[in-house]
Length: 148
Image 1: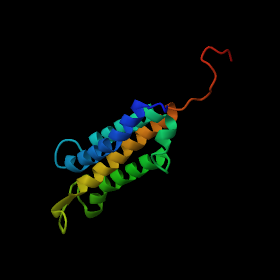
Image 2: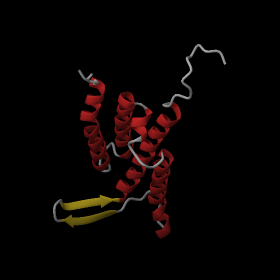
Image 3: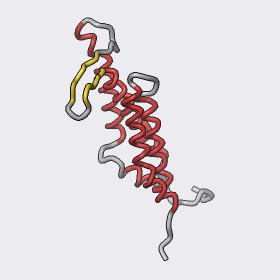
Image 4: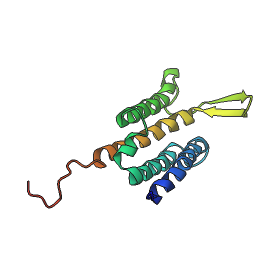
């Protein structure tokens, strides 16, 4: 009889729901409290669940790129979004809103704040991935009480 790992099955059932919730917080939070940081923390909790269920290999299988690439991309997106208004003589972090009419979604208000929050989201997710990469792997398979 095949052994059922309840943690693994539970994580597989909940993982994508938690990620979609984190994206919801990212998109909704740019007009209210929340946004990139809170969404990134929720995505980090999904990554932590994958680590508990499958170890470092499950975390590494989440993305084909290295964690520092995600973190660096987030810093670039947030930095460019924050500094772009300086090119037009405006103060940094000044928000601009673009009103669009999309066929499926209707009227959509896109703000530069969303781009900044997306950068923050990527920084938090990249940092969580880096923490698991740095501290989540066993360096040796030797027992703890073994003498060097």
